[in-house]
Length: 192
Image 1 (cartoon, helix red, strand yellow):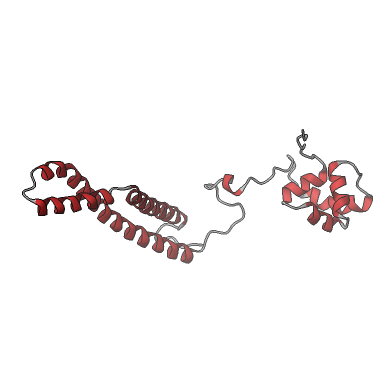
Image 2 (cartoon, one colour; image 1 turned 60 degrees about the vertical axis):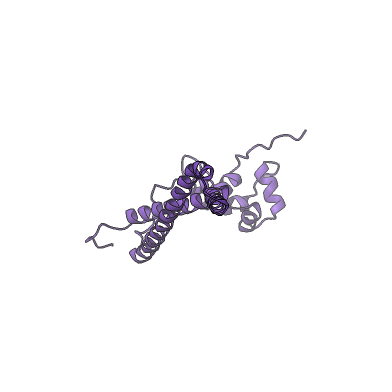
């Protein structure tokens, strides 16, 4: 059974984690081979004076509390502003906001039409059993059966998926529009 890998606590590992470097990238900076850097990071070889001298500026750049590795992109906080970034330019945000609002409105109109179709289909399916029993002739029965088939198709799993995809796209665009509006300075306040 393979043993679990332990996380290295060596200075090379700390620098690599903090700066997001691969071993071969750090080895290139240090002027050593990737194999040597691997052994030094694992503690099987000691750092030479020249390697330690080259590593020192990177170690000094680490935070005093020790380097915290960056989280995966999906776990990074989304609400905290990025430190050191200038306020965003308004023009691209306004353009995207306009796009989001326009397309969300278009999707909401499409959803309203679809909801009307779905409501009619539900009404037909509720009324059809009694109508089929009371159908005056074969022609009326065929017509009602076509309505039943159409209403059933309007409410099937594919139609449901289409409805939910439209709804989710509209909600996503509305959420993005709200986030963009929050990034923009209030009306009448000039961006710096």
